[in-house]
Image (cartoon, rainbow, N blue to C red; front, side, top):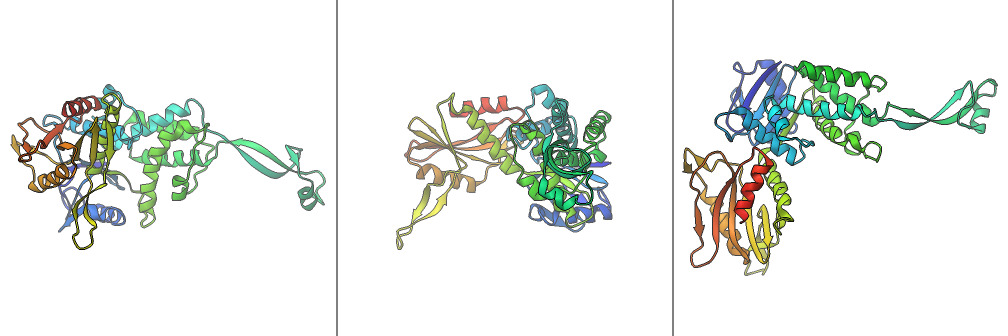
Length: 406
């Protein structure tokens, strides 16, 4: 299986270089129904804008990594930062310790997702496969459960040796197991690691009594958990990611393509929100995401307030406010600050419209060290600041946020 790694919004995939004509055509079919607005297409080339993750096609795996170089010396550390954000935001619904996180970062993203899914599922299956009671109605040679007199008369008028019965039977062939098995069968052909392949085969053997039937999108979206099957929920969430994308593509083509793709600016903002939530109680904070109660102007003719202000976060501490806006961009390049004036105008609108706010922070991922600017609104005790945070681990992120808050 050929694997190509590129960076979002930076590297191009080209026919004749990374892709042949068949792979190019399959990729275009894959993206056209969901991701077309997130790509830039040139003559025989394509690149992804603000999307990271993997696309698994029939003969090639495309790994899309963040455009920002979090660590110059190691691609593994860049991948580690991405996996950290995915786990904290529960896009990858597992808890990983530092050692496991570092180990996973050495693999391509496909094997990261496959390993997390297979091992999460295997852990629960070793405790026992999930079973449900199903109501069975049948003609039987012996009496089972409840004898159904009226149905017996209709069915067995000329078969006196049979009894029409209704009874409960415990079964493994239930919807949850069908979904979990289908996802394993989707990823199995593309797994290169022998240990992971063996674990996948073991799972498929455990699901031997589970039928291979089509999985519908409504089955994935409407599935409800209960006390008995709750332990499979993390594995189910990853299986749903696999199957929803596969269903989307197979609907329009014969390929068994699937993907794990995430919008990077949304992921970064969600990660910062989760980090702030960890700090709320200890630091006596109140965090309000996507605050939209302020307007920038009042229309003289109508008297209505116009131009909604919607900062990413308003942080309340005692009677003060701090405005935070996240930016998935590099703020430093070779020691030089590269902010955009439009971002400063936006922050000026925030800090002047929120009377109790004396700080407005533009928050960027940290890629290198350098002196970051801070501005004061003339004649007022209000400031616009630029800060960066580390992403390799949640511990480092929380340390940097604490420093900013204090």
